[in-house]
Length: 288
Image 1 (cartoon, rainbow, N blue to C red):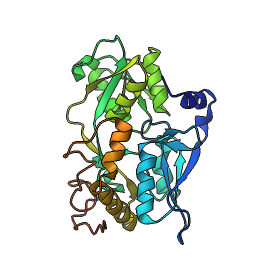
Image 2 (tube, rainbow, N blue to C red):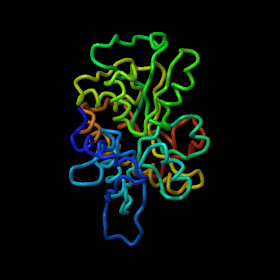
Image 3 (tube, rainbow, N blue to C red):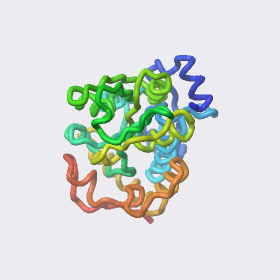
């Protein structure tokens, strides 16, 4: 089941507000003003409400460590994912600390750091439902997704071919609830989120992974903010090299990353190799 604090907040309708909560991390006594970033605060285990106020999760822990390396305080806003990229492009945020899937389309309009996690598109279904073994078995089904994500885009792109019906929600918990209530056959999201939801909701199980859908989960900045991209990338690389990203991954996702996983691999250059915005200049990360 959804964690009690998240269920209570959803029931109270508090997720209708543009900014749901703020969490401040990193060193407080610095000469520079705080950086600002944002997450989807309903995307457990990456970011979700804390009983102590604000949000907790893998993203919060990771960017608290990034803030320490940058010697900057960081204010993390929690808001609906569909509004995060427009808000950053409007100047509200320096970067997004939400896990953002790097697609060809996004890389043409944003600058991304290298990935710190791999994500794959995975379906979750209600326990007892017929398992999905291929895309063809999705034919005629209703699929729930979180708005403004590659999961929504995948359903839209394949709706005509497979006769899919899209149900898009502002929050991932609502998308899971649609499956449990029988309004959707399956929920499509990232593999870490589907597995986490399944681990805490006995009636929801992780199912079919779409082949060929491995992407970088990375940090975007505005296209003109190359300096910020470089600072973030170098901090993330250092946190990979000292084992911090792998440790946080094991803490939140329940398994130690393999040597070839993005949590441990420092990719060459700046940004995801082979995509728009990639800079092959060797990294200047000083990880002493």
